[in-house]
Image 1 (tube, helix red, strand yellow):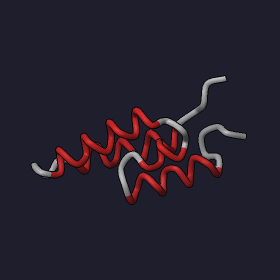
Image 2 (image 1 turned 135 degrees about the horizontal axis):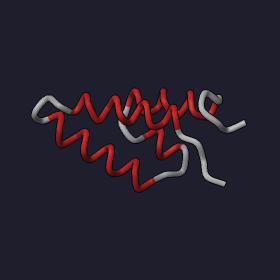
Image 3 (image 1 turned 180 degrees about the horizontal axis):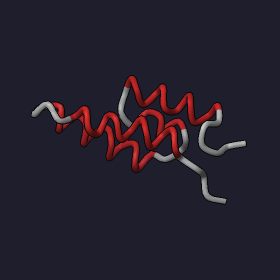
Length: 67
């Protein structure tokens, strides 16, 4: 059971809540994790990082691995 709402996705979403991209890294998606981390860091400079931060949390929670 690895679909949306599974325990793994909840943990990943919680990780992304604290550090953008960490949830994606936990899920084994290092490229998107790096993109979200860097983008959030850059945008926090102009106070828009919260947008990427929310995207990171939602993406981790809704992730469905391909077979």
